[in-house]
Image (cartoon, rainbow, N blue to C red):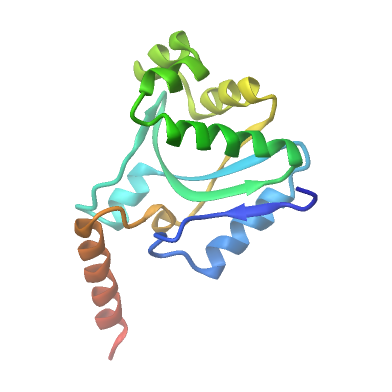
Length: 167
């Protein structure tokens, strides 16, 4: 990896150029980070999309939603992709994933004792890279389509937006 790499997912329902540009511009401005992870506050998602069920990671002080946006800024950041591949492979054997990040850390994480920054610091240290969260001002950046129910909700939201903008 000689140049930065943006990774996202195909089920990113409201991804648009403004979101990508903001994320990449701000991530590229920091020279000392290997991997940026896009996040939004869960509360802002709930305000914009009441009733939408989103996975929220409750960390000390705040609940966060991932945005499926990753900015791999260095060649060392590939270690995170390798860890993710191993975690996907072992998703039916969670004890293997826990062993990788450490049982003690996992327990304190589940008890809500770590902030987002502390969590990313811990994982980064395990990988030998620096990982940071980049908070986005776009709650819709966290909306993906993981189920038929998600798809129906997103479809309705799009219809509502289209009818609201039609005179």
